[in-house]
Image 1: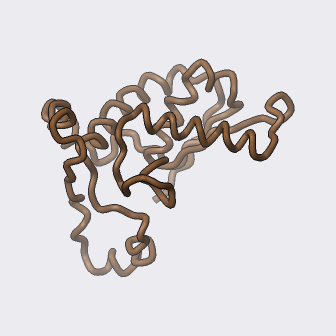
Image 2 (image 1 turned 45 degrees about the vertical axis):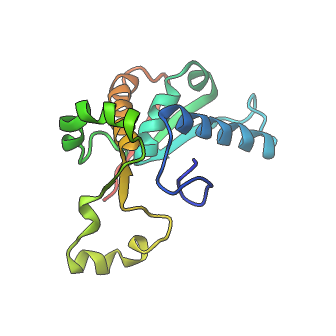
Length: 165
């Protein structure tokens, strides 16, 4: 997805939920093409971690997702974790995304205790990490979580939840 990992785009910025889903579907179809996957003979599984788990929940519940994937694997899916404050300020996020969509809010976890920072130094110093989110990202988190609560009960495929700490 643009803005994530080693992909192009401005780090930590996504323009819209539509862009996120378009990037994910493009990746899936490109992988099928590149690896010459015979979809009739090869079962496809959809896997997502954290916020990706929430997105694949919603993807699996689409018409294409229901017919394309045999199962869904969710690794520590981001279902309303640490987002109560986002729900409280959601009514302000919506107009903010119209006026200043990429306004950056710095993470409350940017200041952490020394032991935690030492333990997770390798992850925390990874240049692909970001310590902020934008108004658009925050709005997408809230809206996609709401959508996932409906989707999870309607997914036709078997679901495997993997939790980790």
